[in-house]
Length: 610
Image (tube, rainbow, N blue to C red; front, side):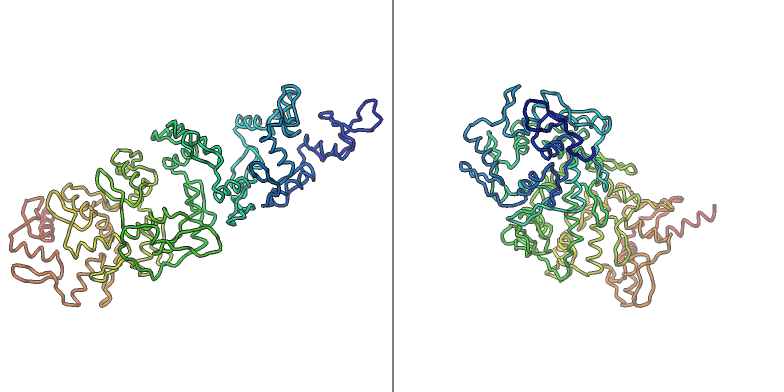
């Protein structure tokens, strides 16, 4: 509607009184002065010309704005004499004290005898009796008595009239839209007077203050547990009833909250609604996005760090107070200076440095750093693997794990090193590459030989070399290995499995490194160069064997005739002379040979004859 004026909306009241009054054309309420009528008419038209310069909230009149500004002041001057609750206004204390005295409120509805503390609340209530409809739908012009009815009506249109211009998110209320827009601007106008923390809404700040006062006004009648919000208490009652009303339709998992179910469903859909404003990276959880955004603000140096094997982790010896202007207490890792809000999170993090894995699987006895990782692992034994790879039919618990696996088949490498332009499939591989190759950072050092490693796991495996222990044994040929991955690759020799296939000649290999070395025969790439004679090689092993030519070193010696060789494979071929073993057989004439190169030379004779 246009701006309200007293002339346009006034109709003279009839009566015997000589005093001149003006009345409202909507509700026939009479006023002595036109200026009071103008203010009153704004309650009907919705016009709010007086705006708060702190929170931009609008009001019908200047006195209401003035009273509202008091709420931005931290100090509440007026205190209840009975329960010591504080208020910004004197009238608010008087209204509150009636709760203790039992005195009935001043305003009474004449139609249903209901009482109200404020005249405005009673007037709003009487609209229900009069069936007056003040709220109009902007889409179909249908009218409603209450705002909640209008909001429910909008769902029929499947539309929310207030839309955000930045992210296309829509809302039923304009105030909700304004609060949402603060997430884009990162504006937090409400500050806690105790710890200087900032909040987007006043309700969030009030809720936060309960932390300082240890105040939990809502108490469970069954277990006496306290809560800062009524909705938390309501949710808590479902624990006693053993009810989890929100169930996932894909995996039958149930939750107490609808929000928790919504977050869980993202593990099935792979939806990542939260996007970093700096690098546009997406996240499934807002907490992960916030943690990521801090990496753009502060980048701590990882150089000149040394790590050693630690005893069992506890919080007390490992904490050091973080320096800064904020009063929030934070705990800091003494190895990598990473900060944590809670000591329990630091304890879990420290296990990544010490290698401690206190949570063990009862089925396969595999150890994990945290309970959440163990719970995720146990689903493998339960058979809860719903996501299947279309190429190799391998199954996974979540769509995130499936996407990581699929990169093996597509050879997709999205993570690029900014120093050498090398690409990697996982971010962890990239971080390890930067630390190991470019920074030469090997924080885990062997105390026996001084050799350094980028990861504690590699140091642990290296200790097996000194102890001459090979814990991973093959159950078919009694061959043993230092690593589980090496044993898995070896077992494919017995099963005949060759999962890694060349996309040019379709030749298959038991290990990924074999496929990579083979692909260089097609591309002609020779990345390993000898520093002495500049000769290049396709594999690291052939370069190492070649370098022995310059040093005249022959480390592999026959234990029968004491003849020495530069390569282990050459020694194995030589030892077959003593044993008489001929493991390589021609497929055409079934003739046996000591080494593979002689067999291939022989097979060419059959091809030339045919």
